[in-house]
Image (cartoon, rainbow, N blue to C red):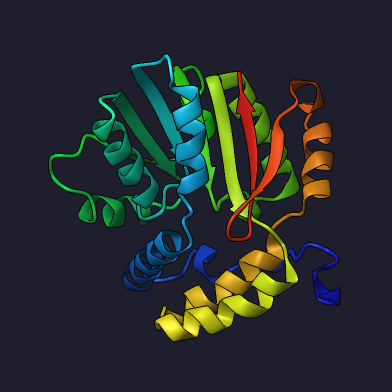
Length: 232
C-alpha cells in the first residue's frame, strides 16, 4: 500500500510505439474482456440514461476507444431504448481502428477514427466520454483534455478510470492470471492501477484545469472505478 501513495509515472507496455500489430490486437481483445468482466461500461450507461431522459437523439465522442467495446455497448443500449445515437470514436494509436472494426458487426454505424481528439474541435458533440484512458496521459495532456471536453460537450462529459487502491493493485494480477489474459494485460493492468487516481487528486486536477466552478461530480463505482461526471 505504501508504494501507491504517489501515482506511478512508469510507461505501460501497450503504449510502446514498436509493439507489433498482432500483439497489440491481442492485448486490446483481452482488455475488452477485462472491461466486460468488471462492468466498465455500467457507470457510463447510467450517465447516459440520466442525460438522455428528454433527448431522443445524441452525438457522442469516445476518446481512446481501443477495441471499440464501449461504443458497441452504447450502440446496443441506445437501440434497445429507441434512441438515435451518432457514435464517433477517436484513438491516437493507428492500430486500434482495424481491431475495433474487425470486432464490430457490419451493420453498425459506429465511426472509428485515428487521430487526436483536439482535431475534432467544433464538430458538435452532445457527449464526450473516455474509459480507462486518462491514466495514460501526462498532467498537461490531462488538463488540456478536460478543458477540451468542457468546451466541446454540449450536454456533458464523463471520465471513467481506475481507482488507485491497494486491494485492486494486489488482487488484479491474481484475477488476470486466473482468466488467462495476455501477459501485457496482466502486467500493464497492475501498472494502470498504480498510474490511476484518488478522489483528492481528481479534485486538485479539476481545480488546476480551471473546472472547479463547473463542479463535476467525482464518485466511486464498483469495482474500483473512479468517475468524473459533468452534466449540464
